[in-house]
Amino acid sequence: QVQLVESGGGLVQTGGSLRLSCVASERPSIDYALAWFRQAPGKERELLTRITWSGGDRTTYPDSVKGRFTISRDNAKNTVFLQMNNLKPADTAVYYCAGGIEGRGYTDWGQGTQVTVSS
Image (cartoon, rainbow, N blue to C red; front, side, top):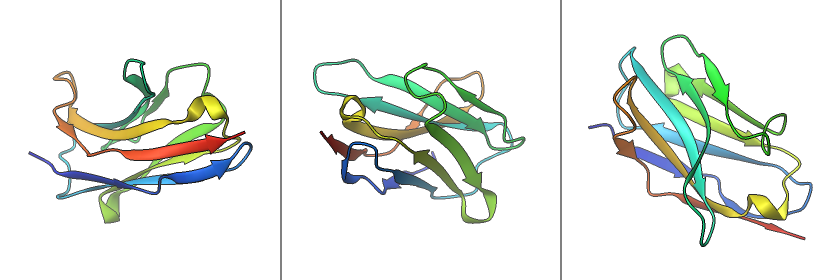
């Protein structure tokens, strides 16, 4: 099982930016995918974006973050990033990094990092 550790959360004003990092404890296999989720109070966990470790194929899901959130990876550092720009109060949530073998779901989860956007 791959251990995932997120960092980079914090408090930011509306319109600001944050970059979250997710470091894997070992180099993921080529058929591994990593994703960012978030969960706001009283809401279900939401899949934001994912990237494949091998080819770097990226997919971003909700319209609410398209054009503002970008996922990327640094293979040499076993790290995935989530660049978040033009943040809004609605982006306030705990952000989670998750990973798993493609087609088998996300089996590895980080502990989460809090992002708070003030108005």
